[in-house]
Image 1 (cartoon, helix red, strand yellow):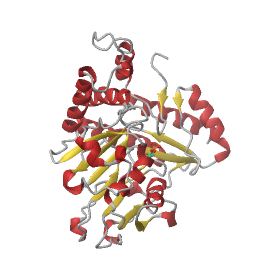
Image 2 (cartoon, rainbow, N blue to C red; image 1 turned 180 degrees about the vertical axis):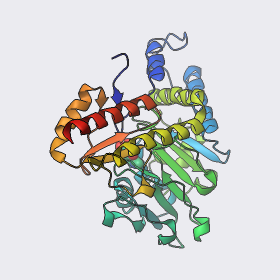
Image 3 (cartoon, helix red, strand yellow; image 1 turned 30 degrees about the horizontal axis):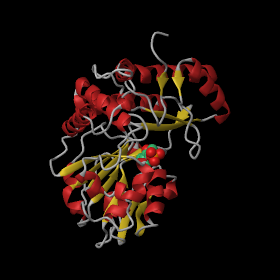
Length: 365
Ligand SMILES: *Cc1c(COP(=O)(O)O)cnc(C)c1O
């Protein structure tokens, strides 16, 4: 094999090989500074330049408007499930659209801080469809509406962000876009806050990106830890406490890689191409493989699928490993298989997976 194995992990997930190589080269001495990035003061000019470049490249890639702050935080997606209600709910009402395991967790956590209720739920069909936005029960007094625009575990993705104003709501929209950020453009006119753990589509675990609209700063509950108060983090350019410096550096390298590949528009095009290839394989397998997700809700990033004969699961996974196709086992709550097709997964990797799946089906069908 002349390339590394293809890694389909849902997260922490595969990273672009040129990024890993550059990080390895710079490990002991970043740009002649005599220091590795992990060894730098976050307030020194070297790291500040790394931080500023990461921030500005990300702002450019996603066309983030000037009235949004970009915060580089810690705590991950689950941390944000508490940090968001502490910053935005004012202890009042929160409407949460439940579309899978992650938004379900967001609901449960928000209930500790606010009057959080599901505005809709697809639990009845096992989180395999998307409740249409026109059916959501939105409360007039809600302090925000929370959605997860790509459910990593159940493989359900919203094709577009809802237009809450058109639905008669004045509440800001909060978007957990952890597992598909940078795979498509974001319509900022529809967003109040968006957040994403880095370990799916951006970089190492430990870094969380938060985009906050200016007018939503300054609302934190008194119980909110200072290090998690968006207005304090924003006022200190994410350096109120020590940020996850190495994660920011790695994310910055990934942002530059995305830009060099042609930006988010190119990631978007590739995501469609890769997903079409894999779903095409599932759909044309004569029932050997199947996905339970509604056609209109299929995620381009995370594809859970099943073998009709589940007694073949172990053989499928063992053969895949041997063929250099790693981490295809499905999430324990769903079972079966899951292939994650993040930005760093090349088309070649999906072609190799589909080739293996077709061959496996021929041998066992
Ligand atoms: C992975 C994930 C999370 C949780 O992230 P942690 O960093 O483990 O807290 C939350 N939401 C979504 C959509 C995710 O994919």
